[in-house]
Structure formats: structure tokens, C-alpha cells
Length: 309
Length: 309
Image (cartoon, rainbow over all chains, first blue to last red; front, side, top):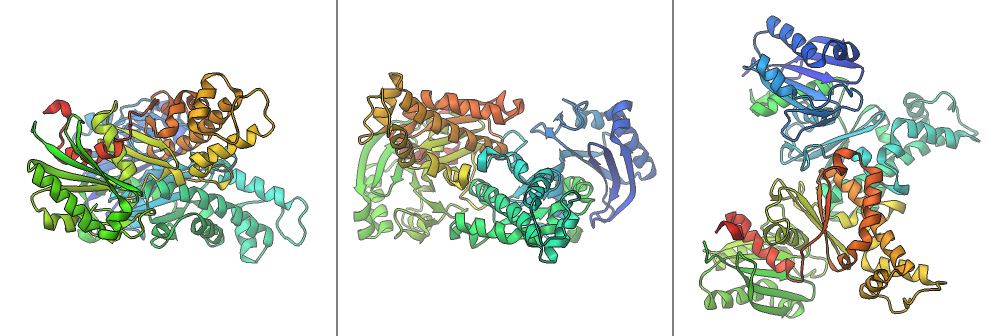
């Protein structure tokens, strides 16, 4: 099993990443294609062509794991709909690839669930029974491992926690998606004094820097993020009874500033049964999480961990 | 299997119901004990004594299913905590009973999940792959069947949707528990004219009657209920991706008046992937749902349906 070689593919709205992944999480032979070009060439054909190239160079590839940014069929054979690649719709991608590569294990998964798989196979939470990943970026993605399995929900597309409704009937994403955070920051900076933040030139980096230096406005922004995130975590925990939360994505750079408000809201709204056991950590996630997680799908199929081979 | 005879037990804060249940859902030999008296006698001993009486009279009893109003261990062996019977805490009830009755199948479950099991084995949703039950009463109870199994969440006590947070950081129960509904009705009736509702003597029955006769205040109350319920259903659906909702409990008498606002909120907040498949129905639930559902635990163990034996 030491030679289990996997091709991971991470499909995004602008680019599609390919890479050979070892069970230890080493990525080699990295490659990136333009999503729009692939769509123009015929998405499935273009995908198959690149897989074929990898197979020719590396005949020892045992499986291909692919992450898609959208809805999949519950049996994980078909792409239903990808908001940012609407051309790829109702596509029986697994059957198409299985026909061309009958000896390969081929697995597909939603991209946020792939990232969760990445944490499960390569991150700090390796092999943990239960946890939830919350990826805070432009939007809010999420996935959960329950009893050592990806939790899909009844029809295959659960864990869309960014679209749960909270205060004012708004979704979590409407509250703390990147654009909303920046809009909130601009609002409170309108008449601000005693700050070096420039309200016309705001980003996560500037906000994190300012918070580290004790800027009260930056801190207020992350208190806002933590409060909304905390309230939604209360709701998710009430439904899934999970006690292990990983915060990932670009905005998690501000983890230390988000955590206090988040914890305070959770402690206020959940009884000790939940809070005594609760662990909230920064995710291990990197830019390659999607690719690694896609490879994790194949490891999951074989129940292989890096330290068991 | 035609003779599969089950003892169902439904434990409540004030009374404990016992009954022999057939796989067809007939209940005989009904009996009710006072919870406080049982606690005084020693709860487990009292429970065992009554089970023994049933077994002596009916040696063909194959299993005992018990519903508890509170938190259970994930392996369904132990009661962790019952808010209304705090004396019954950390009790290894299954082992205690197994020791006394080694030949019996003994199963325990949370009461709202029992009611869900009741719907699954005896209601309109018999054998349905996936559905969620929302029981609207004094509080808001809930359970879900996912892939023909009770969904427990990671640690065994998920589906507490009554405690999810929504508008104003309030829980669903704080919005539409019975007391909150009555408080809302009183509020809007303060300066009301053109209504026969008596704000000092309000109940579900009076509100339903009034709504049936077109009373605008009664209708407004149920629009309020449907709106909050709808928003929380959006959140649950986003997490669990279920497409089948049953509304039960005393307040479901007003189902027809609650549904329009509920549907409207759901349609506004969920894309067609969810709403195209969504079915919302009144639950079949009766007062005996808990008892039947407890018996359903034993049927589930044997995978027996009324029409398969």
C-alpha cells in the first residue's frame, strides 16, 4: 500500500487544479487548467484528457478523487448543478470516466466536503470520529464527519450552513461572507477616529494587522463575525450534536480575534452537555486542502491512513 | 412473527404510560403510573416491577421499548439527564433491565425520536426513506429519519431544533412554544376590535375556531407561527437536506392556517433543488404516538413492518 498513488482534482469556478497525492499528503506534478477553456473544449472530455496524461506518465495511479463546487447526486455519480460553472449540469461524470478508465477508483464530492475530508486524512483532526469544518472565505462553506463518515444529509447536499437563517432572517453568509464583513467595517469606520484603518482600502490582512495592534474598530469587526458565527454554531450543534469545530478559510487568519465572541455566544446559549465537550480550533487547511481532500476520497474508499501503511 | 408482542413505555414528567403494542399498532392493557411515585419507589426498580407484571401476564412479550424525555448516551444504554425528572440521571437503564430480563430485547430512545419512530412504523410516512417530524406543543420537539434510520447526530442527542437560534437571537421555542404564541396573541389583541377572541382566555382551540371563522387576529397569530417555523425549517433543510416534513403536536390542529406562511417563507429562501421535492404534511401522531414509537424501536430492531408479517 506504500505506493498508493492518487490523482486529486479540485474544480473551481476559474481554475481546475490537478496533483499527484501520496497518502502522506505530498503533492507532486501540480497542474492548473482554466475552467472556461475546459468548458469550451467540453468539460468531461477535457477532464478525461488530462487524467489520461497523468495515467500515461504514472501508470501506478490507483484512483482519482474530484471535488466539485456545487450539488451532487446522493449516490455521488452525477453532478446536479454548479452555480459558477452552469454548463456542467446533470452530468453523469463518474460513469463517463469509468467507461474510459474502468480500472480506476473514481470518487466525486462537493468541494467543502472535500476540504473536510482533507482535515480528516491530513490535518490535526486526522481520524477524529466527529467534527465540523467551517470555511470562512468569500462565502461560508462547511462539511462534517459523523461517525468517521462524511455527513451528506438525506439527499446528499446537506451542511450548507452558510445559507441557514439567523438574525433578521438573513443567512450566515449574508452576515459574515467577506463582502458583508467589509461592509460592516466600512459602516463602523464612517466617523471613526483613533484608527489607522482606511475604510476605502479594507481587507482581511489590514483588519487582522489592526486587531493585533489593538485597534478597537478591527476588534469590533471580529466580535461581529464571532457573534454571528457563534449563533449559527449553536443551531448546527443543536441539530448535529457535534463537539468539535474547525474554523478554516481565509478569514480564519483572524481566528484569535473571532473566537472570544463566538465562545461567549455559545456558552450563553448551550447547556453544559454541549459546552463541556466542545473544542473549537483553527483548521489546518491550506490552499491545497481541496486537492488533498479529493485525494482523501480515495483513501477513504480504501480506509488508508498515512500512518497505517 | 405474527405474534410479535411488544411492551411500549412512554415516560413523561408527570406520568408513565405502559401498553402492549402489536405490529399493527393496536394498543391493549394500557396502564399509567405516577412519575413522582415511581421516583420515590426507586425509578428503575419501579419500572422493572411493572415490566415483570406484564411479562407474567404475557410471557410472549419479545421486547420492551422505552421513550425518555431527555438526553441519552449515544450507545442508547444510559439515560444522561431528564430535565423534568432530574432524579433519573446517569442511569444505565438498559443494563439494569437486561440483568433482570436477559431474554428480552430492550431499547431506549428520546421521546421526540420515539414519536418519529411512531410515524415511521405506524403513520402515513410508514417506511419512508427520509422525513422530519416537528412536534409543536408546549415546547418544540423533533426527530428525523435519514436513510431509514433515526438520525441521532454525532453524540446521540441531535435534532433539538426547538433550541436553534433564529430572529433576534431567540430559539424556535421562544418564538412559537405555546406560551409565546399565547403571549403574541394577547399582544395583538390589546386594542383589537372586530374579534370574538377573549385575550384573557386564549387557547389553541379558541384560536383555531376563530381562524376557521376568518378572524383576522387568529389568522395573524398562525401567520406568525408559520413564518418562524418556516425560517427554522429553511435552516434545518440546509443542514439535513430533507424533503419531507411532518407537523405534529397539539398546535398542529392549526396546520391549515400555519402552512401558507410557512410555505411562503420556505419558497422565498430555498432554491428549486430543495423546494421542488418538498412535501409538508400534518403528522399522523396521536396521544399514543410516544407509546407506539417506543414499540417501534423493537420493530426496528427486527425490521418488522405490519404489512411484512
